[in-house]
Image (tube, rainbow, N blue to C red; front, side, top):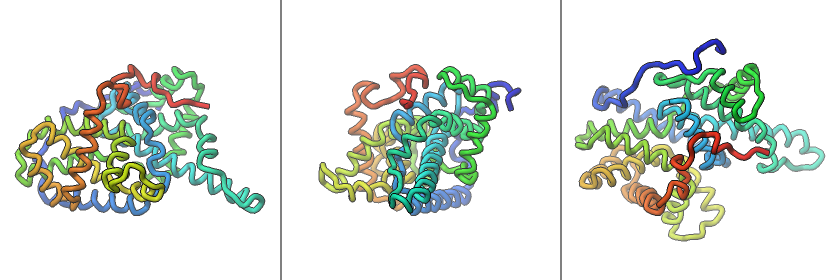
Length: 328
């Protein structure tokens, strides 16, 4: 592994090609994604979203750009890190709970456990980006040499063996279930379905805009969903119970994809917007009102973001080194 070239090209990709797949395959894939999404939401841990903070997401996005990784890889890396960290924290809580339960009758708090994992957090993040790059069929694969050079630039002294062990730790903790669908897959599939349903949309420009909007939604996640929650409950001060119940909305990839496409059409081709919303409703079962509210929350955030610094976008940073999550 260490003798390989730092970044190995796997070919050039000019972007997705639409209208090139049989309708039967598209239908089966849509059903599969919908079921996968529903299963994930039904098993959602209460800590979901804790590791999708803006600074973490931005760090992964910038690192992916630095290493010339494709669009889907950065989303895959975010989701891998999120799922791995939650499972790791759960395991640590269980271990400490079983060890201390008899004597003290209580488990370590979420915050105390989280403090204990900060010393390896950047290493785990890099490992998740590495694994995500290996799942991609295009662009480049991040080798151990590349990863170690980057970590050394941050003053970490990890070895190749420790890097390998970190990757294995992520794989084992996730039981090797690392090839999960990202919101981008939902967006691209729904764009394909819209095309087959007769929506005459500029596919490639819309796809490019949707990717930008998806980035924006990841980077401004808390603000967008906070607006959406307040719209849903018609109250500016949601209770803890309402916030907890809203978690399934925040983690719904299908809703995110539908909202991104709706917003993209509203910006790029407003004349088609009502037709697209109607089609998205028929395809996914998500109500037009929910689609409208999501688009409103996104557009409101866009309009309210007059500078890159306000929305936490990566326009304001030159490299991932500038966005290192604080370490203790």
